Length: 199
Length: 193
Image (cartoon, rainbow over all chains, first blue to last red; front, side, top):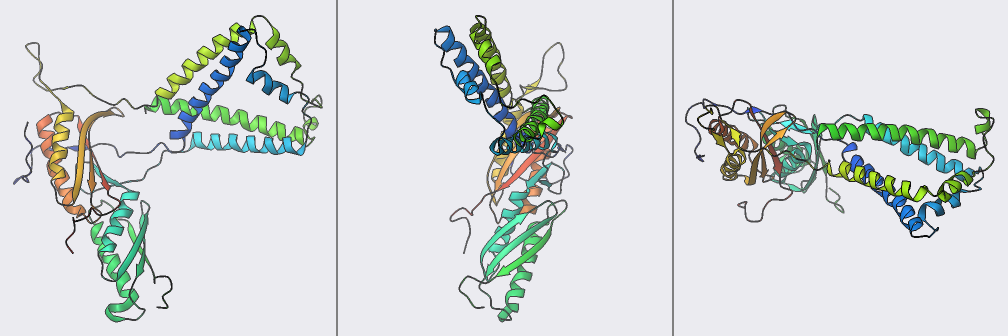
């Protein structure tokens, strides 16, 4: 087997067909293991009860919890606990029905390369950082748009187009950096002056 | 984690959710004294005497021990089912017959492809393997790029390397998935100022 770093000089006869884009499981991805752990916890509770009683004892976690509930009368506190339990249940139902998360953006090409939205945001920040007049950047990205927050040293109406000029150059730089994506997201640029600056 | 396990997770969360909604709503209505509107015989106070009787029966400790073992095994199976198992063995190549089998270690080939990608300017590191994913044989390559990497150049390199990998493995059913991750910060000294 040999793979070389040289680019093929002619169109390769084989090509790697892209796999399905990855999707995330969403909330159920961590809720499932937590529910499994809870089941193990229930097993421990029941097991402790069995162990203590088989040893001749009678004070168990399960028995204590059951006794604590004995004689409980209807109060506003019980109603509040009930509301919380119902809300947790509702959240479980929503998590169970929630669709899988899709945050991958395919790169143009044939090999199934993709970036996740968080990586698109980092790439946008990396491109914006290279523009003159940019002090700091922070970016966030979805599948359709990327927002770049830029802290600039430029003055409003200053040389080189000032703040607006920096915003334009940042937008151009970010659009250039993301041009290889199959569907490049829309780029929004927001500029702010450094704190304590009157510009 | 397999789709079956995720489906089981969803089913359990859904059923448990419905039970909690019903129990919570019932407790809330009871706490506010409204439960008698739909259930005339609603108790005025909780009584756990029946549970206490069960705990006192001679068969209870044995039954509880058996239930604990079953629940623990079920819980542990469910928990460990979430650990992904996607590895594939050697890939059988076309041309294999009774006289001999031709096979290739797909993950080694994918790792070699990743090494090639790691040499591309703007790429910090890369790793590769062949896995079985959602019924597909997938060459999975993770590429970590610098924040100022030229994405078009990375994409071109990925295509070229992917084509070479397809030729090396020589299986029509092989698919590619290259996850391009971007490093949080520029590596010190990698940029000329």
